[in-house]
Length: 273
Ligand code: MG
Image: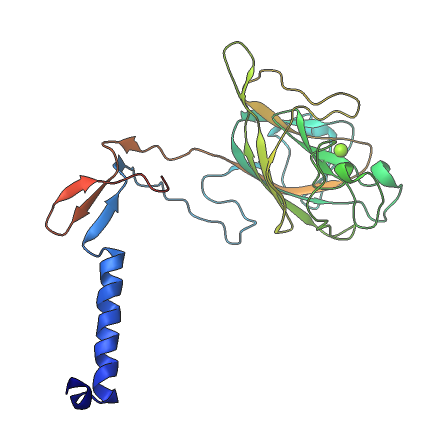
């Protein structure tokens, strides 16, 4: 009887081989999925020394020397490589659409004032969508007006604020809104924000402009500058850089397909149907 011929040490290897063969069959080795899209090589970018330092393709808006990249920059004070809010808003001379923005800021020390009067400034994307800057370390205010809020539209998911005097970072990924020829909205703006490395806004859909006393709405516009708000508080800024986002463009040569080791090709069924 076979049963008698096979002891435990024979059965286990056979079982193992069977499992491997079954696994290979189900993974379709010899079958490779091909998207049918030809991609260019992604451009090489040299990262900064640390993740806070600008990579090689960044546009530097402030590196501690001067605010010559900004309209109105001569009004602000620069001390020890730090730009301090003074005498009005400043607006980047260059305009941007989709972008990645790194900016560091510090609430005034000692902390004075309360609510919206304490360490208030703001990073406006495309000249009109405010990511709030505020000393929200230990400071009550309305939640959609605290640091890392899109002003009057959403609070941040969490409060990742550092104490006044310490440096905060915003790493912002912004998708510009798109408009149709007739001026109506084709797709809204989206923003993702890391505050001190903590995700505070995840692909948040911006509803339009962010004033204190108006309904958010969209009005057709093209690229726009970044502006930093003077709200009367000496908020400090440093290390500001931006990268324009340029999606890699692939060319569809054919519909998705499979191929095997012998060069045989056949159409790929749509997944999830
Ligand atoms: Mg503000």
